[in-house]
Image 1 (cartoon, rainbow, N blue to C red):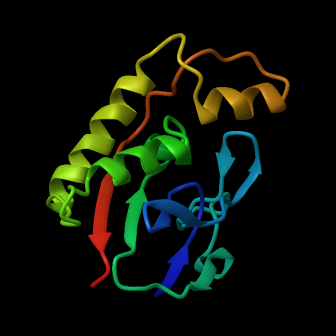
Image 2 (cartoon, rainbow, N blue to C red; image 1 turned 180 degrees about the vertical axis):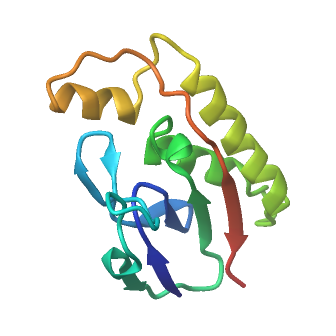
Length: 145
């Protein structure tokens, strides 16, 4: 799979229901991601990271905006990828899995107490933040055949 990514949106690849790869986050400092745009203060396309990752049949790719990854740990998303497969080895529709992940990210974003990736990163940056971060939430799930 070839991908171009910029900023704090990205994707995760799950192989055999386990997190196998996560795209890198690009930011200057806490909560200041790279952003594309025409204004002088915004980044140009040459700051994008180009990736080439080996994928296999059965892999699950979860693409998401920062509202997903700021509010859900990889292990949480992994748990939903796991439950998306039934006992016969068939997966639920990708759209249904995407909605499940988006719903959990939304719920977590509105929490004032839940431990989230955003709260952990805030703490590392010396800032106080409890709970999630309300932000855009977009999820796309793809199954590799």
